[in-house]
Image (cartoon, rainbow, N blue to C red; front, side, top):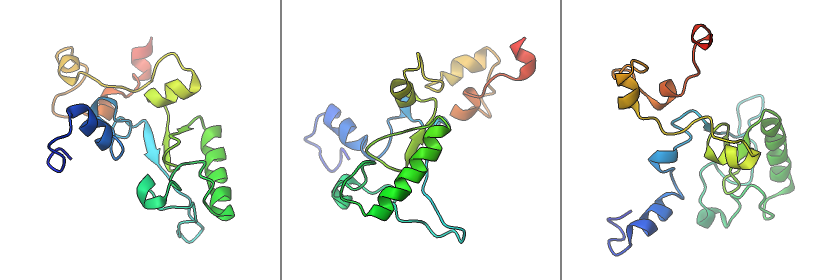
Length: 153
């Protein structure tokens, strides 16, 4: 992005890039705290949800927003089905992407009123020196894994 816009300040580059991927310090997908989902029929064919997953606001004329009023009745019904099921399971939707659902990340904490997020940045080097994470197998998901039942006593 910075190569395409060398005159933009860092803040503008970050804001523009964040429309397409999460900044590493809050990346909910790589921490296991977010998923992108759609609906399919019994034959695996995707149902109409108004846009393809990952459609940009420009490409979709805003139809990517969860509560867009420019989508068909069928797409609205399918989004309602998806939202009802995932909300009942405790997930929250990121409203600019009908397909993005999270549990335990910062946005989830904000939307649910939780005191803290369950998943977040980890200092894997520091955890490794305390014997909590093997540097060979360290990942955001392993660093965020709940403790084993034996370690909870």
